[in-house]
Image (tube, rainbow, N blue to C red; front, side, top):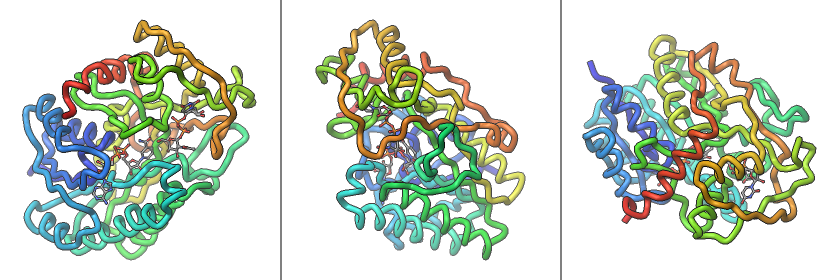
Length: 338
Ligand code: NAD
Ligand code: UD1
């Protein structure tokens, strides 16, 4: 029998890529998204890639009635829970909005999941839940100490899931801690589309390459790293999507609670990424070094060993492929997003 997966936040960046991978593997996908950071045009991109439009509910994870309708109508086996607000700066300005959307929203969703006797939940957490590490490398058992409201909402939901597991031993739970998702679907039909000025490095560089922004501002070149700029673990969004399918397979075999890093384990600096993007796009990326951004760490990358052992998954795309795919999407998206 075909499994039906509810993908909350399925019209967003990571959710839409995961929906595509699920559909291409024969899963029935049902999307719930309130369009707070996405648009219905994403469905057109999904359809172009897969030949099908997934059933979609435009609504909020905090809407109990809507959840009840979905679980009653669609016989959901598993939930992949991507819906959430993710802008670190906005979270500092509007903590109640972030707590309500990400934490109250998740509690409301989990309540409906328990009532409907759903078998598996996969949750989008973030490397931002970790405290600082001198080696810049994170294993899943390292201390957790998020420094911003956004990170705190992720940790709270992780804690709620650990409590749920104690009273519901048959529920399979995967907490996936993403490092820095970048890239786009190789078809160029779906990708990230940040509203306003991008906060993150890769979409900012892509805007500079397009001539939408004049230059990149590099936030500090005096970090204790080889070239002085920040080191991060950039992971292709397609690999990330496949990590979710690996987690789903794992939970289908064992009803565990697993907490796993999804990263490549390979750090790249801001200057590395800028240089690769210049080669891939054939465009000059002018930059200016400015002071460090508040809240940034010098380096952060995954120890991906557990994902390999437990999920039999590892990220396959290299930094060139990530830059190529975002560049293709960057040139296409004007024609795709209305
Ligand atoms: P995104 O903003 O592109 O997608 C999130 C989607 O959820 C959007 O389509 C939005 O409209 C929807 N949404 C938000 N609140 C909702 C609500 N209350 N009800 C229904 N839908 C709602 O973000 P993304 O990059 O795809 O991230 C997906 C998840 O992964 C988020 O939970 C995010 O915190 C987490 N995450 C993202 C990153 C990253 O760098 N992109 C890193 C670590 C973790
Ligand atoms: C940021 C968030 C993190 C979130 C992640 C993915 C902060 C402090 N952290 O992580 O919580 O999970 O995005 O969405 O916002 N950089 C520049 N110029 C720019 C943009 C970035 O030099 O215009 C540098 C940063 O200093 C950093 C690197 O590029 O060294 C990556 O930055 P970014 O893409 O914003 O990701 P993170 O800071 O790792």
